[in-house]
Length: 576
Ligand SMILES: Cc1cc2nc3c(=O)[nH]c(=O)nc-3n(C[C@H](O)[C@H](O)[C@H](O)COP(=O)(O)OP(=O)(O)OC[C@H]3O[C@@H](n4cnc5c(N)ncnc54)[C@H](O)[C@@H]3O)c2cc1C
Ligand SMILES: Cc1ncc(C[n+]2csc(CCOP(=O)(O)OP(=O)(O)O)c2C)c(N)n1
Ligand SMILES: [Mg+2]
Image (tube, rainbow, N blue to C red; front, side, top):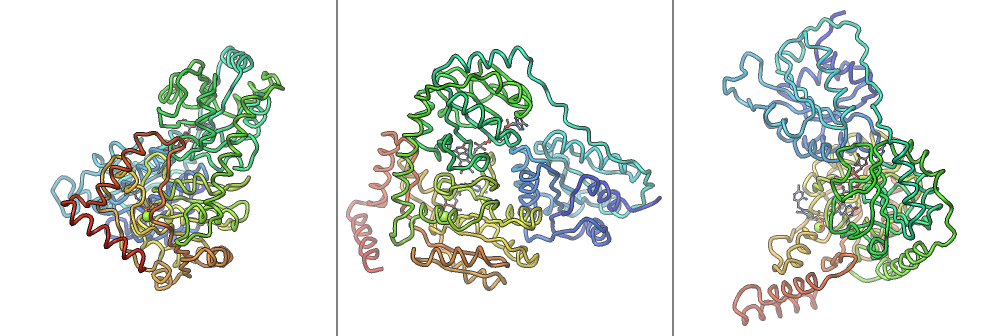
């Protein structure tokens, strides 16, 4: 049976369960958009920026493990996709980008909007092909889909405008997506790992998103070994933050309890994690790493025993070989340190100060959301408040632009998440910088009538950058943002909006927004002076910070005018 090329692509996508293509119609992809208009199972979701579409597709892929799809027209539309596609690549998410291209007769003629797309996408893509003849269908589409799914990466299919609706002879070729060839760790290696774990005094488990299918085995193993569990940030939702074995995260956004447990540990057991910060790995401990990808073994930290395999399958073989320990000194110390940490955090989380403290805001979000909520978080100081103060429960999902650490992932990611999970509450947690970067896509959420909630941590600045500048001893520069009232902006865009400046208003606004069945924005003015501290403050940080504050005080000018400035600012603060 004959059909047009774009319909053939959509039929292939339908075979792997795709329901949405995010993008902006026009020019070279009008054929694709028309095919979507006619397609029974796949919707074209018009966004306001192709990057937002790519983030939405990436978030869907990260949360569901399936394929996210995004489209952009030739030239600028395709270029706009790039940051979102890198987000998918770096987090191992399967995304297909379909882009337009100038007509095939114009290729190589410096035509308007002609960009060498294969070169543009060369680094980001595991599969990157331009269709030059309709007879390539459906095989070329199948290959693109198969490679994205099998290699957990980005595929790019470039379709010149004149071919989008070209007739293709569609042979009935069901697409084969072979199950991933899962490596199996050798029995000997599992036994060596069991011996090392059984013979050690202080095992600490660092768990990552790769352990998502093996949570109960991780818990059983940790219980037998009396080992505290530290969660890599991407894996924050894997085990409840309130679980007695959990001692928070590791890294700049982690807890002191985790840093101290790592210092004491004699065997670190990494399960499905690619935690990227070398300074936070233990200096002298032995290390066992369990990962499905052999190229990830040892790339962050030297490894004594490598278990290359699926977390669930491998732990199912390993955990029964672990002895039940009774002397849980290491765990007891870690727990004590964690309760101390939590007590320390509680003061800020319950503080009635005005402006509202971000710690209090993050903790309040946790109190008002129901279990099963999906949280999508931006990059910034906001990530730290969420990492430390938003308590996730069993059944919640959490994701972010984890390895690329791009700004503005929250709102578009929430759009992708809400479309993939229409019945679950979805909350985007945004910085004011990140939110305003792709704010246009609030209108996308409104048009789609999605019930998602956006909470803006509004400190009127690129907060994390100011902290970075000051930690390096540099005075704050160019990080301030003069924002509108985002609640009013939200209302003007057709969403509901709440502006919160006082802690007394916080609970009511969050509750109303979360209960609302339309797009809701809660713009919370938070204390702009709040600094996220590393889990252990080194003298270098304190010294740099003090130096920066001094420079800010004298404003880099002569001391007298600097002091005048500082006095003026202080007076303004008092009168406001
Ligand atoms: C502003 C900002 C600050 C950040 N600060 C921190 C921080 O302080 N601490 C922190 O932890 N993170 C932080 N991050 C995130 C950090 O960059 C990493 O992305 C994150 O730590 C990685 O988490 P992960 O190991 O769970 O995921 P990934 O890096 O995706 O690793 C998952 C691993 O699991 C493996 N895997 C997949 N499937 C399986 C399977 N079935 N069986 C076995 N293995 C499998 C994969 O091959 C991969 O190696 C920050 C991010 C941002 C945006
Ligand atoms: C696209 C992109 N541009 C720049 C950066 C560098 N960067 C990281 S965090 C940040 C500030 C984010 O500000 P905001 O969203 O207001 O969050 P805050 O730090 O204030 O909580 C910047 C500029 C980045 N990560 N991504
Ligand atoms: Mg900010």
